[in-house]
Length: 365
Ligand SMILES: *[C@@H]1O[C@H](CO)[C@@H](O)[C@H](O)[C@H]1NC(C)=O
Ligand SMILES: *[C@@H]1O[C@H](CO)[C@@H](O)[C@H](O)[C@H]1NC(C)=O
Ligand SMILES: *[C@@H]1O[C@H](CO)[C@@H](O)[C@H](O)[C@H]1NC(C)=O
Image 1 (tube, rainbow, N blue to C red):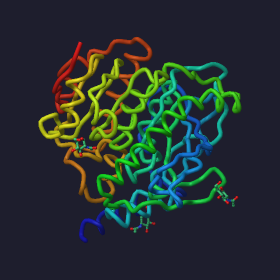
Image 2: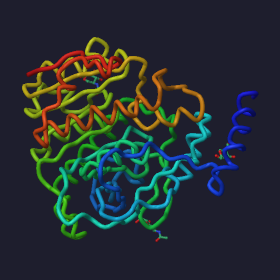
Image 3: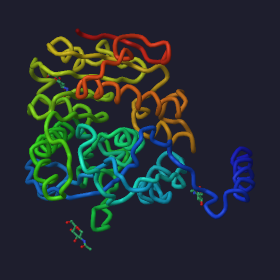
């Protein structure tokens, strides 16, 4: 209570200086040379056995494109849809509705591709891909194009391109294993579909996006979906799983991706406690690495690491939010730079003096 009062006094003083936008605060500024554009599209796709849709058949999913643009940065605007911010405020006691970004909606494309295209899958039932906007805009500022895929009626809240808001599962949804396995298969099929659909979308938008040698990455259920999609299609050349237990074919077979992969875990998330990771590493014949982060918990691998600065850290780790954001940006970009652009980065080869909280657990090649 005392702390809250103190805080609002501080805000009041700042308000005198920062008026008229007294409560706005930017998310970390992307470090690359490009400004970032963003746009949303619905992708038609019949996906059967979808546990979250009426009649268990979904007919479309949402893609949000993050891309480098020659346009000027936009005026600061809320970075998270207000309905989604409210759900997390109600759930975790956070209040981060004042966070803004300068990504420009429907911005122009560069005349030529500036980097590879990456597919991104979010956590199971939240946050939606908007809740990874800090990482995705960082990568786009360096020339990457990111197609972030959101599964409708699963994510707690999504804004469709026509402005309609759609609520999905509760943030604290508690599905049984069978339900989550079905959801995982739906996600994998969406990602594999999008890998094939991308050239059509790029042609329709006259967008000079690279449509081959894709990267795939995601958090939790989206991380496992990324690795499994990389197993299903050769259009994906390299993949990252941020802290997700492996479901699906990767858990039930001993197939090798035969392409580079990176696993990033919370403090202590190693093959000793996760059989699905043990199985994965035993079978991989390509380049792979596993790093964990001291004092990080599962959701610190999303923008929640940053959100926790405006409320309780529960259920996140003790690691500083800005530090975690910087670390996640650094390792994800290093992996795609190395494996899609051929720029070797020593940070991936073992312990790093600059990142002492990052634990190098295991690797191959
Ligand atoms: C959240 O913060 C905004 C200003 O940043 C304030 O207007 C609003 O009342 C706060 N909401 C809650 C639930 O504290
Ligand atoms: C917006 O799009 C959704 C999904 O296609 C559709 O169901 C809804 O009717 C649309 N709403 C408006 C106002 O056009
Ligand atoms: C992985 O497979 C094992 C053995 O069939 C099973 O017991 C476990 O529930 C599976 N895990 C997941 C996450 O699908």
